[in-house]
Amino acid sequence: MEAELKNLLSDLHALEDSLRDPTHHSLIDKMRSRVERLSVMENSRVVQRVKIKDMSAEVVDSNPYSRLMALQRMGIVDNYERIREFSVAIVGIGGVGSVAAEMLTRCGIGRLLLYDYDKVELANMNRLFFRPEQAGMTKTDAAVQTLSDINPDVVLESYTLNITTVQGFETFMSSLNNKSFRPDKEGSGVDLVLSCVDNYEARMVVNQACNELSQTWMESGVSENAVSGHIQLLVPGETACFACAPPLVVASGVDERTLKREGVCAASLPTTMGVVAGLLVQNTLKYLLKFGNVTPYLGYNALKDFFPTMEMKPNPQCSNAACLEKQKEYALAKPARDAAARAKMEVEISLEPECLHEDNDWNISVVDDSDVQVSSTSSGALPEGLVFELPSADEFQKPSVSEETTNTVDDLEDLRRQLEALNAD
Ligand SMILES: [Zn+2]
Image (tube, rainbow, N blue to C red; front, side, top):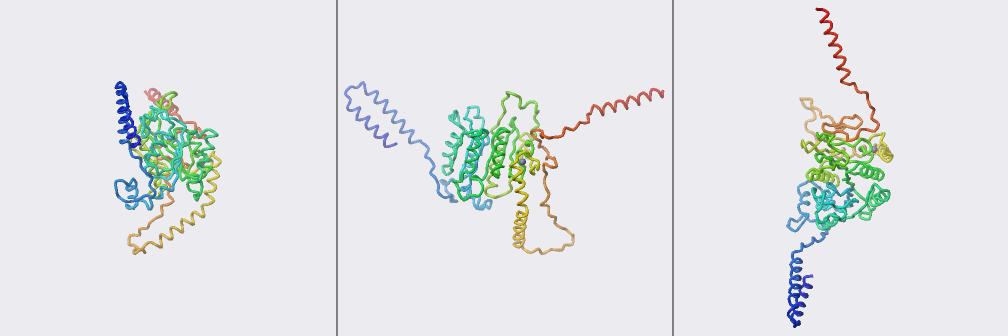
């Protein structure tokens, strides 16, 4: 390009010399200044990052992976480079999904599958990721444009479709099943599905697809008043699916009557969405690279900076047939799972140094607390700060003992006493 522009300049110079009529010179000057401007623009263009074959831990300014590979040196992750083997599907490339996609791209994830049917609008500019000049582009195409510039090593697949339509659902399922990226992978073609959609119907569709495929997924959400959010891990058969229990939300302390009115535009904050995307990708990294604990349910209340957590067991009366099927499979595999856990524990015990103080004067004994459960849906108890977003469909409507009745009884009792007191006089 640079050489072409130089040639164009010398051609213009030759043309100027050959022209006898000086009135044409001003036009030539104008063309020359245009070519010069193009030369400047070409020189200032950002150099595109080249693809990198192997992740290196070498600490040099030009290595985009040095800080990530340092996680290995710090003893957090055993093998960071494994991240290149993983495929993550992100459904919904909005305020949470787009930021999650950028984080995973910067972390050097192997492959990202992006699903959305919407276009970028200027009304999205209060959130992170998309830029004003991308308004009008589909969110998936705009995301691929930005992400491929940030990290060309990531394999990006863009699906501009609505998963809640019949055709969309079919394409969604077949793309999740496609194993061309890693043919030897067991199960589906992806390692994790992240749901970053903003409505109940789309969540139920992701739930259906993941139950059918036995696909582990994570759900995320931000409240309509923009001040609370949550993430949840869903393992078909092992944890509650999205249809097992009414969805949970973090009680935000905002008057419900001010929310969800017809025609009222939902609020959104880049801060809350950034926090939820950060929590979601943090747990994705922990799940994929096997470090730390993956939280089953983590809420976020921005008004109080409160983060409630809990676990949810699957509901044996779940309305989703695929969920019941996976629950059965999980129960059948229990003996094998227990045996494997026992064998693992025996190996760990045999590797431990022998205990020097088997008897002690204080009769202190250690009790196994591995069976203690934080809470479950069957008990109906929720940790402080969490509420169900929707009422349970088959909830028994108890006739409430109204305060009014109690008050009436109290009042009558009072009246009787007053009358007795009057009669006594
Ligand atoms: Zn279920």
